[in-house]
Image (cartoon, rainbow, N blue to C red):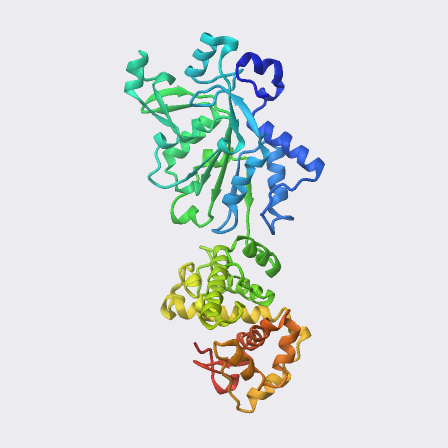
Length: 463
């Protein structure tokens, strides 16, 4: 049974736990998880050998830290998962700052102990309530983060404006005994960063010219995009110097890692099937975009791109299944229906702007399909397929998979090779189309407005 008063707490709760800082608490729980082999950051993939070891070391060293990386690299997810390293609940006084019952820092908390003693009420604060996050923007003020003087409070209490009683607390003090996360730290104005540094390092800050001392127990964690150091702002030197660890994040390094992340995050309607080879093609679009000179690589290509792309691919397959009364199996043509998931997420260089976002997106889809086909080429015999088109033949695959299957059967060996990729008959058309689109992406075939043909018969890529 949880204690309801300070007296009960002293009799039933390990008081050593109340003497720990929040960083010590996270360190102890991390040590326990490491010893017991528990997963540390569920849902975060691709960082097992890079980011996570650095993160573990920072936590064991009790560091404030910053995650540095471009957009869509799970930085916010990692910060929010830090709550798993906190105790399920901690006892606190019912004050604005969730004071430690043994060491209150607010005037309200100290007054409560003086008046009630062991009869002081105790509340229990869950781990999720101990996480406070702020997205930094240039207009964020010291008052937003730390607080502001409240003349009404001062008049009511009969105190001066330099007293804690006169402060209306901001986000950081309200995160006392918890984790305070600042996303995109360089966007904060320098004077706000200096105030943040002062409260962390010295325990005091000036609010509207009045010195105020707040000895907060806060674990401070940040994220930043390297682009922001020059594009929008920078981290002031005193604050940067006090951040214990700078941990670099990155995008998935293999298609398999990317597919695992995208499949975990994307919404797919019930009954819609996306074959494995198409999952790799969706991920391949992001991979080739991260190397394309027409895309601004300093801005990055977020992992949200393949996630949104997969969702629209699933929606396109669902719409076709409902309209034609056929199985809801995704096909490469659905990637072309999902271009809006790509065009809005790319920052283009000058060359890309000249060509247009949709043209760039179509090229990326074709190259992504070609990259994915490369994962299967060793087991496929595409020579008869290429010979068919080199003889001057054309092929059009209708949207209706029943008609498309008949057309694909005209190409020698196409359905036989597709059968090596398809897990079931319903995926056969998708696999056949994937082979053709992959060959287009690898510049072995050309794709016109309505048909496939030999590469030498039509230079470049069609729509």
